[in-house]
Length: 331
Image 1 (spheres, helix red, strand yellow):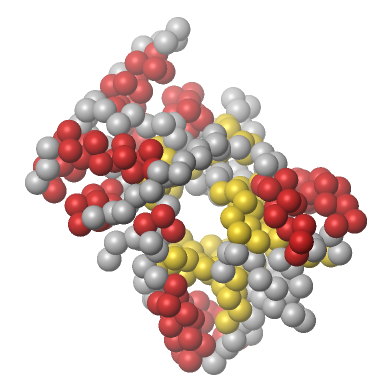
Image 2 (cartoon, helix red, strand yellow):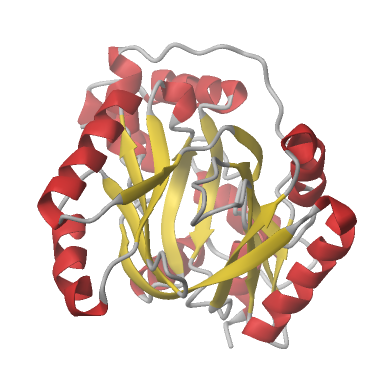
């Protein structure tokens, strides 16, 4: 169970964190409307507690790697059990690897490689093959249909997923040297002080006004997906996470991918390449639940929607987090 203030902060501020001089004061006033008074210090202390206990993975802006000229790719390996620990250590020491999971499948190690350009990703994958002697299967996204995982915490303790508010923008943005400094200073989170933007601005030798203007422009252009808390879904109860994969006709994948991505329990929906004969699937959709049965029920709903358009599918459950550092956009 989680206390009322923590629940409200998570439910209401996974996005939309104020780009104002005293953001925590604004949040405290919003949470006090029609209820017991919430103080600014309570908000800061509660966020600190949630971060310290791991209920939140981080707090701050979430940047879009692709919009900043970077690239990332999902890859997988079939690792023999007697080599699994050794290979894990090799991969986890590579800075370009942001996430690494063990999944229940022949391809039992799945990881995300992030870099400032795709050529660097290919070099990293080649290096992994050389170091481990194992084949790497690369699954770069060819289409993105939906990305976003917001949680809704109920008073009785149940955790559900909900759709992230749509944010479409055609504003182009070319990050300059100052933007890169701001990204580097904020990508791991905002400081928990009364005036977080002023603290960052002072460190960068800027005025708070300039910093806030730059952050707003990045939000408006989609370079920043959102600013807010990032719940740790494992810690909060969504311990069953299934990567559902589907074999659908290539000429229907866009239509079907958008349809599946619109479901409120799907956090990611992509088209990715097949690797025949081992891997016939081209549509990926991440599904979260408190139990495997719940995930299977949700996957059954997807199967019903796809109907005869799907030849076969599978669900790969993550059984262990091997590495999860988040993607760093500036070296």
